[in-house]
Image 1: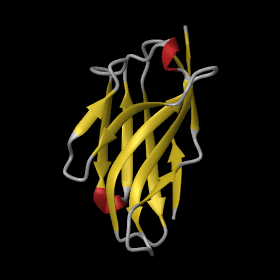
Image 2: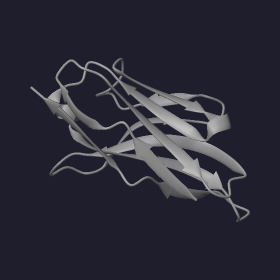
Image 3: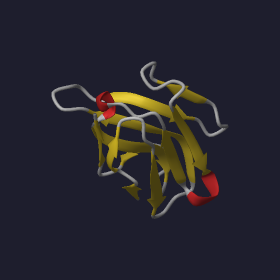
Length: 119
């Protein structure tokens, strides 16, 4: 199983970006999906998560600005980021709990995509 992210880049403060992450390989089921980020000099933090039934959770710092969604038919999770601020600059990682060839769910991670917000 592989997770491939796309959509990062450089944007001015106040702008928007949309991240995508698609899983491929032997996949029987995907439960939770989420996005984390790691800013320079800081620990990795959870940005947003979404369950298999669509329930969502957000870090306080992004509530009202970011929206997580999923397309289960495409094994894809999205992160719509609006009103970006320089503090959102980080490497963003997607993660999914996937039941593939094994009989239990395993956490998989994307390679990371850089988001840079200029002031």
